[in-house]
Amino acid sequence: MQINADLHVHSNYSKDSMITPKELVFYAKKRSLNAVAVTDHNQIEGSLKIAKESDFLVIPGMEVSSLDGHIVALNLGELIPRGLTAQETVDRIHKAGGIAIAVHPYAWLKGSLGHHVEEAKFDAIETLNASAFPFGLNKRKATAAALKLKLPQVAGTDAHFGPTIGYGYTALDCEPNVEAIAKAIVNGKCQPFGQQVPLTLTLQRQYSLIRRRI
Ligand SMILES: [Zn+2]
Ligand SMILES: [Zn+2]
Image (cartoon, rainbow, N blue to C red; front, top):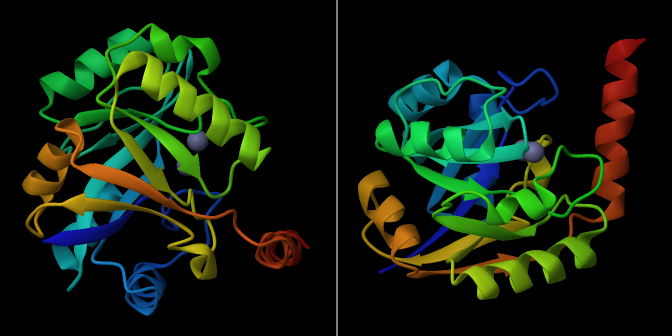
C-alpha cells in the first residue's frame, strides 16, 4: 500500500520547535498523512515517548549535529552523540539498527553537509526539504547528488510549527509500520513530494517565536 509520511518533524522537545505531541498528530491527520517521523535535535527521548504514547504511526528518530552537518536517523532506539564526523555518525546509526539520511544537504543557515554528503554511506538523501532556503537550489543540488550517488530520495518538512507539517512528504510503497518504512527507504521504494512552506506560515512562526521571547 502507499504510505505518505513526513520524515522530518521537530516536536517541542527541540528547543526551537513549538509542536506539541497533540498538535503533531492533529496536523498529520489533517494533511492526510499516514506517518510522521519525530526528529528532534540531538535527543531521542521525546521521539520515543511520542511514538509509544501516540495513537498515530510515529517513526522514532533524531537529527544529529555531526561535525560535518545535520544527519537524520530513523528507526532508532538510542541516542547518537553529536560532534562526530559524518561517516562515524552514519556507522553509529547503522550499528544501532537505524537508517541514516543526509538532510537539507545544500540549504543555507541550517548546518548542512554540503560536499560531505559524498563522504559517508548514507541510506538516502532528503532531496526535498520544505523549509530549506533557497528551496529550489537545495532541491536541485540534492537531487543531482542522489542521482550521482545512486541513493533513494526522500522528503520532509523540517517542521518547527504545526501548520507546516506535510508540506514535504515521502510516498512509500510498504506496510504501515516502522520497520517496513525503514526497509522501503533503503530499498528505494520511496518518492519525494511536496512544496516550499508558504511565506505566510514562515512569518507566523517567526512572529510566535518573537512573542515568546518578549
Ligand atoms: Zn537540520
Ligand atoms: Zn530539522
